[in-house]
Length: 158
Image (cartoon, rainbow, N blue to C red):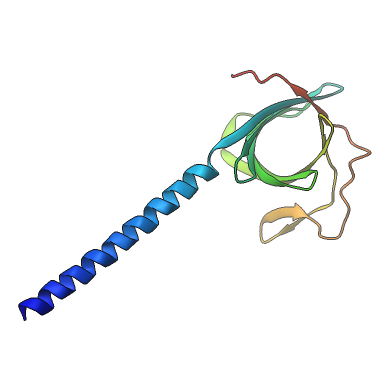
């Protein structure tokens, strides 16, 4: 009976040790995913509108960042973007607050075409499905007739 108890204890210890090793592997992979590879800043000016964009590129290809939109005769939009590049196009989701009213957040899809040192904010048809807005599948996103073309600028901490 003692041998059976020791055997069960040994199996339990081996099982717990293998779980512990699996968790440490997951932590290593998570650390690699959050390692920032590059930080780029951009600015777009169109008439009286100014848009500031900061992009963090992670080792796993994910993109996050901040974007402020000061558009004439509208409340200022301040928010974050998150997405990924597919080819030369950054598809991102822009989550923002408007006019200092932080209790309500909005979320819009965005597409930026990278052309040289420039990012071009595309225009596309957006639809809402189950409360979430997204680009209409099969409809092209226009990067030629646009207002906002972002040029690279030096990053400045706020």
